[in-house]
Amino acid sequence: MRGLFDPSKYRTFRFTERSLSADGAVRLAYALDDEHEFVETFEVPVAPGADLAAAEPILDLLHWVAGVSYYKTAAPPEVACETGAPGPAAASFLEALYSEGLGEFAVVNQLGKLPRPRFPRDGAKAAGEPVRRVPTRVLVPVGGGKDSIVALEIVRRSGLDFTLFSVRDDPAMQRTAAVAEVERLVAQRRLPLQQLGELNRSGALNGHVPITAIVSCVALLTAALNGYDTVTLANERSASAGNVVYDGVEVNHQFSKSARAEALLRGAIAETGAPVDLFSLLRPASELGIARTFAGLPQYHAAFTSCNAIFRLDPELRLSSWCGNCPKCRFVFLVLAPFMEPSAMEAIFGTAMLDDLDQYEGFALLTATGGHKPFECVGEEEESLAAISLLAADPRWRTRPVVAKLVAEVLAVRGDDSGRVSSALSLSDAHNVPDELIDHVHALLRA
Ligand SMILES: CC(=O)N[C@H]1[C@@H](OP(=O)(O)OP(=O)(O)OC[C@H]2O[C@@H](n3ccc(=O)[nH]c3=O)[C@H](O)[C@@H]2O)O[C@H](CO)[C@@H](O)[C@@H]1O[C@H](C)C(=O)N[C@@H](C)C(=O)N[C@@H](CCC(=O)O)C(=O)O
Ligand SMILES: Nc1ncnc2c1ncn2[C@@H]1O[C@H](COP(=O)(O)OP(=O)(O)OP(=O)(O)O)[C@@H](O)[C@H]1O
Image (cartoon, rainbow, N blue to C red; front, side, top):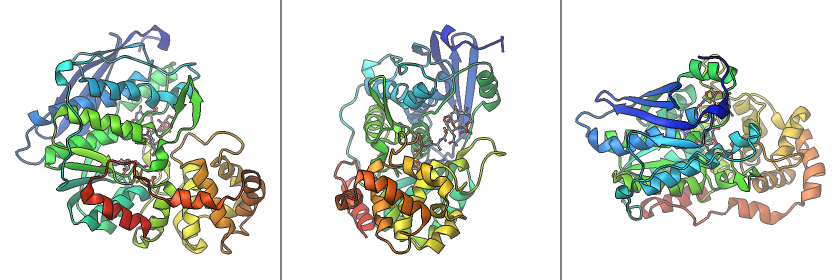
């Protein structure tokens, strides 16, 4: 490294090289002007005899998407696609990803505006509408949380042939697959963490990246290399709601889980011509509705964790279960509690979070009381309010200190509207779930 890193001096982020070999080794290379080079690698499963050449357009997509981790070090005004330009749909997806997907990053770094790099377009790659495919072999990504468990149980009930899939092999993913008794494919990912850390300490920009887009592209590549025609994500309806407005844009921590990102990614996939479809099975549902269904799957309660501390890249900092004191833990406790016994909740979380008044402000923030909804994977303010209403009416929960204070200080101001609960538990028709699966989505989420 040559001295202090000044983000403003860089002009172009370059996509320089990408390769996939028959043993599943993926190498993605990037550069900032001619000064800093970055290499990220993956190991993905490959079925014997897989057609590597046919998977190249998905490899391109992964290369462009995963570049966001390195682009963010300086967020320069231009990008150069030296391995070939994306088609128009992929370019639109990437422009949203490198802008709205870096919205939280722009807010936290006080950039004043969102990055808006323009991607070149290869018109010859243009495709029509996404092709309607009938699912036959399904890959279900499993991140260790409750949502992917509900998704896998929907696919199981459909009778379709399916396999689980994880990026990394964390304990919660292993426990989930063991309870499900379903085979799982695992991809490994390596970022140049030491290099990123050194650059960050010298002044490079750091912040949140749209990680679900990266996981989705690794899942697509694995599907293409192993004969799966469908990838079913577990991104809920609530993931489309933003946190704050900045530079005239609704900034959403969960941008790459949103319906808008899903539509753009589906357009980009159609353009590749790859015979793989991707959609979210849980798009019709809110987090409150998913939690109600998950409460009815007790076999998984000791297996899952939704706490984001499990995703830390540094093994020293990574937990294998709940931290019990972060926005994600609070939100999942809040939406699960109305459907569970207090003793069962304590067994899962290891602590009685709604008895701990030190956590009151964190719970109130989930309803945007005292600030904006936290930059975390939490549901909409309205469904947190709905969960509080349910707890207020429940003799098992209403006297817990945090619930009593939320009722007195939040519901008293925001109103205890019964319509909130029915609206949060209703299922929406805005989704890309095909006919072969939608009845099973409705059956499990309404049960
Ligand atoms: C675990 C976590 O929440 N990490 C966020 C945290 O990063 P931290 O430094 O505490 O730890 P690491 O994640 O280990 O990252 C180390 C460095 O590496 C960079 N990095 C990491 C992953 C990546 O794909 N690219 C990277 O460049 C990172 O910037 C660090 O310098 O704070 C970061 C800054 O705000 C967040 O970006 C980290 O978030 C992870 C990418 C992550 O996996 N987060 C998920 C738990 C998450 O937020 N999921 C969302 C999905 C939102 C979406 O739109 O995709 C959700 O479930 O809603
Ligand atoms: N490391 C991973 N490997 C495979 N899939 C992942 C990984 N991380 C996240 N996902 C998938 O990305 C989507 C969004 O992740 P998210 O964390 O919201 O879901 P979850 O872990 O199932 O549920 P929860 O909201 O309880 O954490 C889900 O489909 C999830 O399975």
